[in-house]
Image (tube, rainbow, N blue to C red; front, side):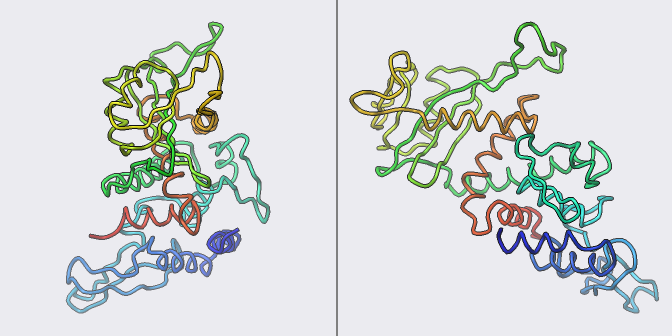
Length: 335
C-alpha cells in the first residue's frame, strides 16, 4: 500500500465531524484538487478561508468595506469537479479511491470485489451515493478525466509504439453484444452496428502498451492508416494471415505472420500473437464488468480508459490513484 493510499484511508476512516471535514479540505488543497486561493468577483481581491460548522467545514469569504458590510461568500468547491454536487467531499474521496483500487471501505475492513467489478449496488449499500443516477454522473465525470489524459498524451505525440528493440502484435476482435440460443434482449436499445476493435500491442519484458481503435470493417483501407499512424516504421510486427496485412512489408515494417489454422506458434520463426490474445480476454472482462458494451459510444470511452491504465496510470510513481488525482488536477486547473 502506497503512502497516498494510507493517507486517504486515514481520512475515510475518520468520523464525519467538522475536524475531519476540515482535514479533507486541507488535504485536497495540498493536492491541488481544490483551489488554495480564490479572488472575489466584486473587488477582485483575495478571499479568506473561514470555518463553518456545516457543509464542507470551510468557505471562501470576503469582508472588505467595499461590499457595504455584506460578506461575499463562495463555496470551497468552486472551480473543482465537486462543485454543485450534493455529496460530501468524503463521499467523493471514497469514490475516487474505489475507482482507482476497486476497494470499498466498510467501517475498518477492506472488501475486495474484483470478481464482480465495481458494482453500483455495492456503492449504494456503502452509502457513497444515494442513487444509481448519481453514480452514473460521477462515473461519467471520471471517464472524462481519464480521456483528457490520453488526449494530452496523443497531442504531445507520445501515443506511438514500436522501435528496433520491441515488437508489436496486431489483431482484431469483436466486442459487440451477441445473442445466443435466441436469448437476450432484442429491443431497439440493443441494436447497434457490429463494430470490430483493432488491437495494437507493444510487448517488452516489463510493460504492455495497447492501442485500441474501433473500425467499421476489416479492410486494408480501414486498418493500414491506423497502423501507419501509431506504429513507427522499422518495427517488427506480428499478425495472423489476414489479407489486409499483406502490404505491411511494403510500408517499411518487418512483418511476420502465423497461421492459426495450423499452429499458434510458428515452428520456424517462433512468431505468435498469444500476448494479444490473452489481453483480449482481460479487456473483454473489464468491459463486461463496467457494462461498457451497451453502446458504441460507451465502448469507445472505456477502450480509452484501458489505454489510460496501461500508458499513464501504471507508470505513475503513486500508481493508478496518484495518476487519477494528477489528471483531475490538470483537467480542472485554472487557466
